Length: 296
Image (spheres, helix red, strand yellow):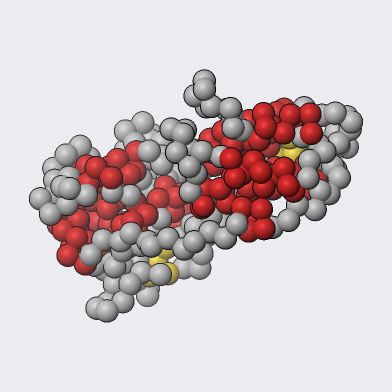
């Protein structure tokens, strides 16, 4: 870094914005962060968008030692962290907090020419993270959700049905949002295929072509004629598959809300609907998989 005392907050803002300047003066367009990561890293590192009474961010804790800390400082900071309501932070959340600090200083080292702090691995600083039981729906509940999608008569029912079917087929929320028409081949001789976005929030990384489950093809056939494409965000043949009425792709708030609205219409899912997560559906046994198999 060119200055002996650079402003860590300015570096953080440039890093999370995806654009920063290297020591040689060259402007670099870096990683495209998803909204959740930008919020979490901004909160943990600099207290961005934190409640007034919250003072647990790394920059506040470390103060003038921001460029002269030791691993023990990170360990102590992570151990003191609480949730916004004051309750103790879970082990997994402490691990993510340590990862935020490690990632920030890795950026300073790799991209801005700072010294290498040789920070120990996350596990050594935050302690082991116990494996959590993954919540899933039963086969009966996924069948109920499919039925609810088929019978849904709320706003844009074709889009709602397809969104549910994509999730039941095992697509994570980021994959459903990042799925573009260009990733779908409808007229292959061997049958419709798609190249699914990778499970890493990167819309540019797609997997090898894979067959589209036949029920999803049926949902596509109903949705595509009414897909609300609008330039410059989307056209009839390009842009995100799942669109809002403005022609923009759905976001990470709208998609889970849509899934919950559909689930709430089925009596067997009414109790689950208010807190139902898209990841829970995606990790559940798929009604589209062959008998006895689950989605990967």
